[in-house]
Length: 446
Ligand SMILES: NC(=O)CC[C@H](N)C(=O)O
Image 1 (tube, rainbow, N blue to C red):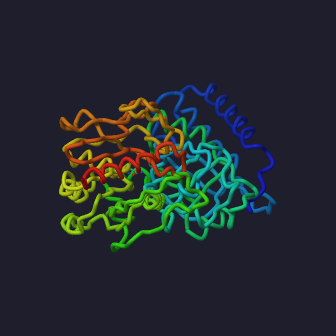
Image 2 (cartoon, rainbow, N blue to C red):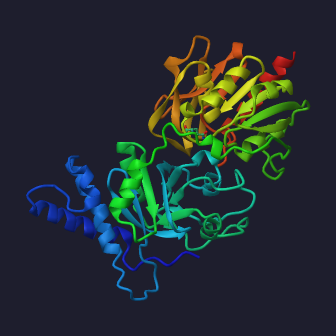
Image 3 (cartoon, rainbow, N blue to C red):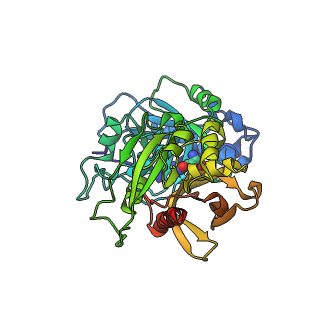
């Protein structure tokens, strides 16, 4: 059970701190900040300086621990961003100190699928929905066997859980899995900063012996671009997968009469991708990320799936080489990281987006039919369509920013999507993509 809220509502505390910061600002002759953690952005805009001061002011207002016992939880955690801002919060889940890239996710729920999505390795996920934890967690919504993300950042932790599937509270679940969580922090302000400045590296800490400056230094030294994160999340050895989507949840009513053998490269694969493929009539062999292409081709599969996965697609040349050795020989389907690796394997370029796409409400247009799907997304990198060779066709665009959301190259028997047709969590609109992969494999059999 979460701790009861502090007496003064957070917004009120925030506003009074903001007011006093503003008054101090006006009475001083310059906008130079006195707090060491904000000093780095002194040369930045006046607006940024004020915001940083508010964040630092919150820390002073909340960590007034005089040793007296109080029946509510005091702020005991900090999030220090690489821009020098310090955000105080209350911890839940594990304690300690953790570095990661902060991304915001606009899904209303589905936090358990997000926590267990291996593509979030190295990242802190900030949920923009202010109320999280009310449905607890259950054994069926896991997308992998562990949590790979660095930590969870939320506005309000639900003080109770109420759901017929709930087996455990979010707080207990995070403690068991040694994952840090913070709440009672201004997630809207952090999201606005990420939208303005782009994704930022941060440090989450409950360790009061570390100074703001020490945490800031950790954030500024840490790198995520150019790092191979796939090798930390892929499986150790091949295995067979045969679980379908549970009949209670199945929404596709016309099971395929044919079966297809698909080899799935595990770059951080989500279970629901495997379940959806199985429901569409596939027998699946999952192989580790570094499994030789020659051994996969020796199995004579009907198709190969290149899965989602964490990090920078340009940092895994071995995976790009594998994709190069396979495309054109058997039908392939790339999802998210798999799509980006296909882009690279075709000689195209990937680039880091300002703050990426993370959420269950991204409109995507299928340019072939004009149909618009609402899709589940989680990526910070994208394929530059201008860099692709002739013949590679952009089939889908994200309607929020026109970025490339899908590819097809008939001669190479390939299709790929930048988003998540398996939709966990998210809408089922794009489930038909699995049917398209089945058709691609069928036509290759003829
Ligand atoms: N979901 C994924 O596969 C993520 C892809 C890649 N790691 C990115 O952030 O762009």
